[in-house]
Length: 572
Image (tube, rainbow, N blue to C red; front, top):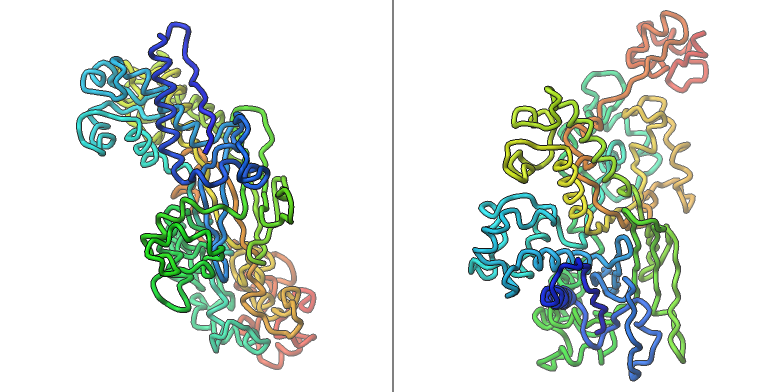
């Protein structure tokens, strides 16, 4: 495998010995991080199939797509599909970027050039990791960093692992939580026979089945009535949301157990054959140590880092440099006889198929520019908190700054009991840079919630007119025209969104989530005669028989179209 090791930038005053140390540390870290690929594997997005296997590679070029970031596995219906991810931020592959930062920091601290940070060097540099967005002193950091081995000496590998623990791994698979009406699970409540299909009769019986949930007796069913035990602060995983265990994707290096559980079908022998893996026999021969014709759990774990991917996903994100945020999908399976020419598509949003299953790939750039927004926000907070206008904050004033995720001592770099605005800005820049030195692959299904589908005016409740005209609302989803709504007809295609983590200021918190509590947004329908407005207790613009204070005969007289509701037009 060929990688381009870029020498970190050093100043003119740096000695030749120090320069050599930076280069060697970068090489060690990069080689340690790239163990997910083997010598027999493709080492770049284009090199997988563009050169014959028996030819010597050309001189490597400094392209982010030359260094694989992570291998992913898509759990198809019959066998797994392997996808190699190449991810770059500001034109630099993300593992390389993090490794270079570690190498540069280690070089700055390693006064005796022995490749580790010892006690004397920690004493000389009490805030050693400040340039990595970690402002704590060694007294608090040492137990968290010095772990393998615990020898009072800090190596580059230990720093890399600490950053992964602190800010997250460079690639994270996550499920996107549905919020608001989309998270309300109504389908199962009205599916009387639990066959995952809603007939016209079941939909018409919805008011009867939900009647016991109408706590306030207003003939309408709000989010909080349909899901009475829903967390009002948005915490936890809503009913019907995709959980990590349900994700059809998994990181390859930790996929062995999932693959064995999912695809060990016939025969169920605690091993996966080439057929079950969707691979040619020759591809597993070397890993099949016991020559059983299948790979056990231990053999799978050794084999996964050697797999040649069938596809590649190349992502390019930009935070500070000017550039176009986009992604590319490379299909190595579309080749024919002769020199391999993979098919490549590039866009911000792509529609692809994996094992004949439609999949939407998209990339967001919402985190771009949020660093400057964070800094501007806290600059204003700083000026407000500086009550005596002496251009620094003492401990008392610091408390008015707001939640930073860091204490006073962590920002007070020179330990003088005063925090100046440049110290605050410097911390925010470094912390955000570390927070955004990774990518998140969020997976969800862009499905339509039945509750959201019926809630025409999005007021977080279903009123009589909305649930009495259900077919008009869902007939466009009845793809086979059988007047039966299958759950699968509401299920959209799977979607993966590539995104950078947002700075802490913009991450969802308790107060933001509370705005999606599920309380109905009732709009006062001040229209129609006075008696009509008075009887319309739930303010939905209709008067039901339950709300009507007169006799049955009188109600039918007003309800001219016989739909069970008196509208404002009928009352006028």
